[in-house]
Image (cartoon, rainbow, N blue to C red):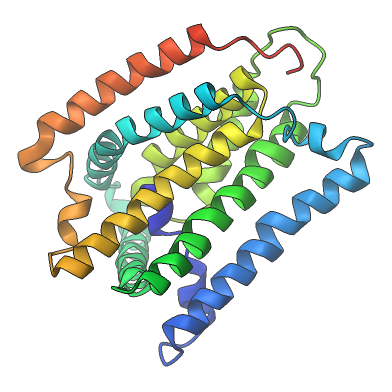
Length: 272
């Protein structure tokens, strides 16, 4: 849910409050297409004779690898909430108090716009939300960050079994900064790094696309169930904290172990 929560924040400032939620979702879709999806495809076609390979869209991962990556993402979600909760408790020094106030207002606005986007109880609304807030961002953002930016930070792909750690973490930091949700910076950065590593280990961008989609889609589905059942949506953000802290800790520990096992079982990509 951390990746999703502020993906729509720029839309909040782009249109007045009187605009319909449908108009906001349309703008969000157009923004994703124009900023994150189409430019990487155009750049790949201009810069490479084999754009799909340059973007690591070929080869595609096996079903076994894809399911393992999706499983890791599902396992990590309570831990992500725990890390986000810890991140939100950070207090800036006194001289940065004005900045902290701005950040808090942005967090509050992000929460409001997220609930506004998610508030649907119809299957048609669910399909729109899955498309606009899960599918398009997963493809577009992965093309931009683990596709184009990763290539720019790591242009040498000839070294065998080489994992460009600096490039992975640099892109992860940018990935988190772009979302403009500072109290969720750490967990989003860690997720960005995880996406970068699985792309290196599998040699395929589609692995991170599926993980990214899973993260966002689960949040969309969870909000749908909550609103349809008349429950309090705030409970979603506390899953893995408070009374379920044990689940958050278990999630973090088992995710680390699962990632290490995934790395061991995945054949190193010889073209990174």
